[in-house]
Image (tube, rainbow, N blue to C red):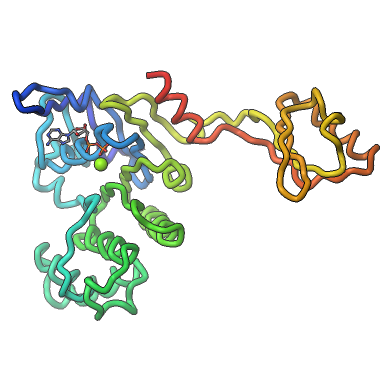
Length: 305
Ligand SMILES: Nc1ncnc2c1ncn2[C@@H]1O[C@H](COP(=O)(O)OP(=O)(O)O)[C@@H](O)[C@H]1O
Ligand SMILES: [Mg+2]
């Protein structure tokens, strides 16, 4: 495993209040991001995600600790050249078209003129915006802006892409589009570091995660290691059985359409329910084993604070 981004024991203090007092925002943060993975940096609002990102980008400086990008100190221009960044609320020039906007950024990165046209076209294609290329950004929806923002973060063909809440404020379709683009970036061999407070987004696409709460990393690792595969309970929806038949077999709740949803916590009870259903000519509609979700883990980690 080649490490692309290494954060070691980073501390950051901010002065806050009318009579300034030093407050520790990052309390010894450490984690490592491997090449070509999607790494999720998960934590509630105010946990310190954006502050960590700003440290990585060299916009602010840690009071203690070490940050390395591609094995070099993070302030080295050569390390920074290979970074792409999408801020949480990017600012766009309203009256530029999508193509002009990307061309402008390509110029900032000194991409040569003949190369630029091709680069911009391929970025527009990657984010599915070919058809909107000559539309002014002020006419874009939030989802379209987010996609153009992503294209902009990729103008310099970065190897490591840092995204701050890239799915924030999007509807379900918009979120899926951005998730698909992120997966495509990984397929192209890029490494993605994604900050989010939305569990589902991370759960769906990230290979590994670190959970930060109040400036401390409370848990980190591959999703499959963090979340136990153990079946917590089985959910059965059925109809044709009375509540009294199900007494003692699990926790039953009424579901829509006269169905009963029963949560079964002991495996041997599942067979009892199936036998009962058969004998009484009742009907099973679904039987779903439930394993721990990232949300369960998150709640557990935050509570254990
Ligand atoms: N420049 C600053 N000065 C003082 N406090 C700050 C500054 N930037 C962030 N903070 C505080 O640091 C904490 C973490 O903020 P942030 O990193 O933006 O959290 P997140 O991105 O996880 O929501 C918050 O309590 C925030 O108010
Ligand atoms: Mg933030």
